[in-house]
Image (cartoon, rainbow over all chains, first blue to last red; front, top):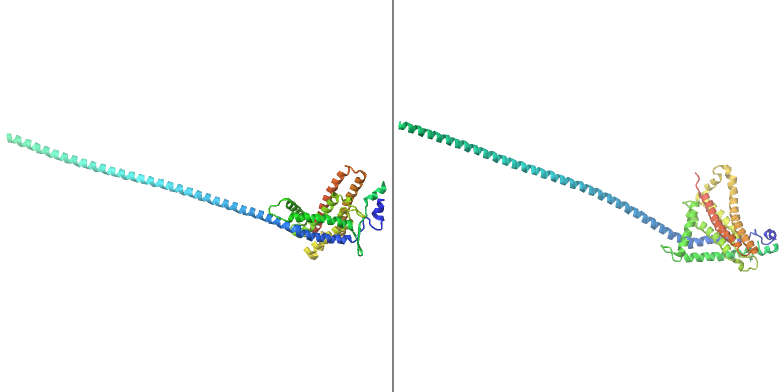
Length: 153
Length: 236
């Protein structure tokens, strides 16, 4: 019974190929164009626009990130150089103050020495002057004593 | 009992006579209903396209992405854009034909002769699709590489020539008969089972049929894309 229906009938059957074939082909080609304009193009535009938007944003973010990193590195080097500069200035100032201190100390020492020396010299000269005077008075006194003794005789 | 198999009406058609040509009316009727539904679905989904997809648009974008991946992996980055609508149309047409044939209870609509069913269960439809695929890959090869396309026939050695020529015939043959056979067999099995055991038993077979239908659509579209990809591929 089945076999009869498969192939037997002059009209119909499973493998009855007729004008349905080319018309179906034309219909599918037409469908391709319709779907292209209704579905593939508009959806593709939206999806690809979004994909481009996302990838652009990612690229932009990456650029910004690298810029931030560069700025960070820049600031770090600036900070570093500022730090060394500060250190340098501090040590320079320390050296200078040390030098000034030493200079002042030396000056004061010299002055003290000089005034000490001067005082010593003065003392010496006064001592010698006093001694001279003393010896002169002694001479005078001895002379006086001698004169008197002579006179009494 | 056997006489009742005739009730399945295998190989019966609703003939339309236009002038000299005869058409299988049931194939066109079901395909128009299904394509109409598809077009309505697509126009609803693309009516208000937003950058932030919602609802139907989301589904259509998923579908689009799926088809793009299919076309891109098989055809290659260079020319897949040209062929994506064709591959997608084949996939959608075969898919809705198969599923429409399996899901919609066409049997409830009585025709004077034959019965409504999946358009892909008719050999005319599948041969039409397969021949379109053949034309497409020839066109793709010739338009992309010119006469160098025929290098493919002697690649990698001229010994391959008869086999490659044979392939041009076996490709549409296997494409059309695979689809036709699978969908028709599915319809017949479900029909026979429903006829013999109307309750419960046909349901797993119906699910299997849905699975087969989807797989067949994927296979058809993938093979079509693969053939086109093979034709545009550059040999070195």
